[in-house]
Amino acid sequence: MKIRIALIVISFGLAIGIAAQGRGGRGPQQPLDIGGNWTGTWSNYNPNQTSSQPNVVCAKLDAKVAKVGEIWEASFEGDCGRPYKYSIKMEGRQTGNAVLFKGTVDLGAADGGVYDWIGRATNTEFFGFYTNAFSTGVFTLKRAN
Image (cartoon, rainbow, N blue to C red; front, top):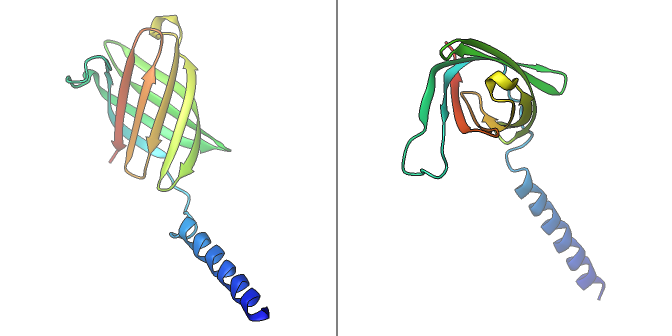
């Protein structure tokens, strides 16, 4: 009887050890450094027209991203019929090899008002989806050289 109990305890301990290894199989995650300069485009997107590609609104979008405390700050600028520059604070958390973002920003009545957006950044790509009362769209950025 004592041997049977000992085997059950050992088996239980091995099962817990194997399960713990499966959860963190890659070891501790290194923090991503997604700060720096990025460049790309932003486009309008109509989810009701899934067969068409997003309509590129402005072919040039530049961003500078920096972590300030626990918040990421991004400065987006370009020219879309007129120059623009917006500073946005983003909540982000690292998941695997990506940082997932979300945010809400009021760009003012002349620029569409309040926008909500979500995004994902890796060491090489920064992709996001935005929406407001009037439009939806996407932006895609790569590291600037």
